[in-house]
Length: 281
Length: 154
Image 1: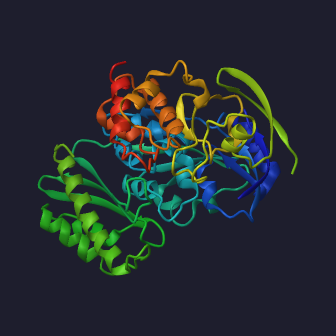
Image 2: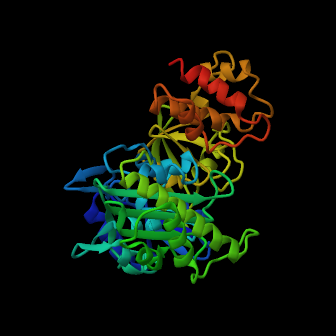
């Protein structure tokens, strides 16, 4: 994007008023790191929202509430019971990017390699949008296409709500890159709830290597009520992903990416199950 | 496209600059004399342009200059001198960690931010916090050894 002007907002009200006035040409900006991937043909006026939209992580009633201008570095450094986003954030790009990029920017415009959409889908997060009336959207609604479609001029993503993992629940995450700071070739994020030795319910999502990040309900269905074992997880991943369309690229075939997805989902399920049963993962 | 002014603190001194809306901080700093800030990839990958903003290392080549408004920016020019080097600069020389030297200003700024953020960093902290600085000469080990020598002494 080519910036033709910039404005700064000191309060949420001011930010919303400026964005309403600018209409579609207005571009809320906090970190601004993703602009490097956009076309110079698109002329926009940037609005610095860093002082208008909150940053920070607060635990309230079984939920971590993350202000949308929270830097990924804060997610990386934060520690708390049932908090898992540090493991996701630390694998994203490099430290300087994590110091600049925000959770809101990472999910408001989804790039093919984005890490957080799959994770927030698996964790059943919800997003709070400030507008004339506040709206709360589930991750399933928010990521059912490019989130930008959901925002009217003057609306801003305020908060990402992530449920605290409770006893008997576990999270698993795998991301494959060519180099440590490289873009994801395939991302797998899994949340499971145990019922004794069986899987009560699971949420499985993948990103990168597919046209758009999303849940894989076919894998979830195969896992429901099933006795947990590594073999069961690998089988559910392979069978559940068999009909999906994958994207090749960077010298890798669609078949390879599909195989990679099955391996990573299987690994993430094993990790999530170990965590759900009180293991170290 | 008209120029606008922004004000921020640079190496302890509050200054006002005229900028183009899309101008990046690295370009602004270099054209105003802070040439210790190196330009490498110009896409937020190599780390040569690293500066510290409000205590955190950032890539100035992709940071829009207007986002620096009201912030505290530090460049390599604030860290030691030839006659009185920062302990990290001395350690880099002692460890033989500098060859062509192009990455070193960025390396030092990342290490400086690391030492402010994590007073007693582990080896893993050092590798994680310096993962955005590429060196094509030394293979990193000597650079990490120099950072460890200073950071783990603090």
